[in-house]
Length: 626
Image (cartoon, rainbow, N blue to C red):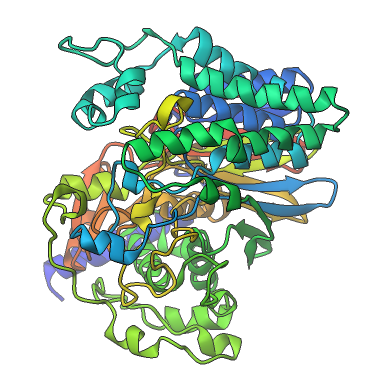
């Protein structure tokens, strides 16, 4: 054996010994403390929005009320989303002891066809602008959650957001600087200019950090929703009916008319019929069991099942013996994620449109075993392909020929910025991590809510005088069945989104609630967070700040939908011997100081009956507990 080989073996042996020591190697001081709560926890992407949730708890509301108030405030603050975006949620209902799913993802509008975009010489729908918009989902999602599972009135829940929009709030640097950085795009759209440029014509046209920022049009829209509720109550309607009167006003009333007028003035496609036909779906989530823990996700209209598939592959493996973030462990995670995400890229789409996704086969543990056999333990496999889950649900794959030919050849670059191939790694990573915030709430009565809302991030088109920023989710469709026959653009259809909240139960009771922003990295980071807690014994805050890895091998859900096989993001403190081993395995590594998400989560201390909140130090996310 060579000297280098002996050294490598000695280092690996030392790492193995250290991984097995009883001392908790991760017990470092965290940048943020655990949020210990006896009564409730509220966490989201901005401190002010978390305060809005706390205000609902102080009024006697439950975790759903608090979630809706945080969602409204975060949208008003342009926390990487706006009111015209989409909302995805998992709710644990202590009355039924079941998890329910909220599907408030918008759909492609009338006229949004493959042929329409092909005529514009686009290979995918555009990243920005009026043609990037699906129908607004967040208002409907908030109203349905509140009506079905909340306790407070819409007037109470929207109160903080209305105050922020009407009287103004001190805008934080992140949003203010994003406006300024994207002002060339924003200047294309009349109502975006009018709302977001508080200093038009000056060197800096965006608000200054800390400036009081007002949105009078949005305040008027939110007040109309409350007015609809209050009028319905005066007419003798019950609480739920009154809240749904606000729903009707947004999607069928005067708000809908102004929204459509504003969209179409800018060249968008959304019609009154599109808004009236769309509705929120309350669904049964998908789940798997990992070593006695039930893990729940939304189904294939988002990427949620990919985490369940990864857990199924990993469950038989002895991850602890590999050592936390050893080269072996990192390689295992990377390969398993690549296998699961390859299935995502071919089989996931809107379950309300045919063909039916093979969910039962994808989540089969026997299927997971066949996928695990494909792992090359010595080096990265850049040619991982989707598997065939159909035999594991007793069916025959109707797309066998497409599967054999996958991946398809990349489309040629189109002319024009809207549909062009991205030119740089910087652009690739910008789209890979696009958009989103997250919301976590829980209370002592047993309600738990995990939400990953998104869409309408800056730079966004504001629709007329509604103050509502439109979604950019259309870009997540494909236009060639060879890429993904389940996610081909069609009017009335949901694009396969990346948004993916998570709930886990242990002993039939809430155990973990977690969500994270970051596009295609979301379920990668949530997978590692879950394993950090379950396999390596980290606290919720330690896991929220832990050094995650990210693979870029899967196909980007945004922009030009390309992937970068072998590309691996690591936290910069990964030691040189791990880097050396990963390089030998064929990885192209990049490094960042923080790679944790940002993750927001709640751990349920079943022994003491208390709540532990965690919020990553990666972004501006913050929480409050009592």
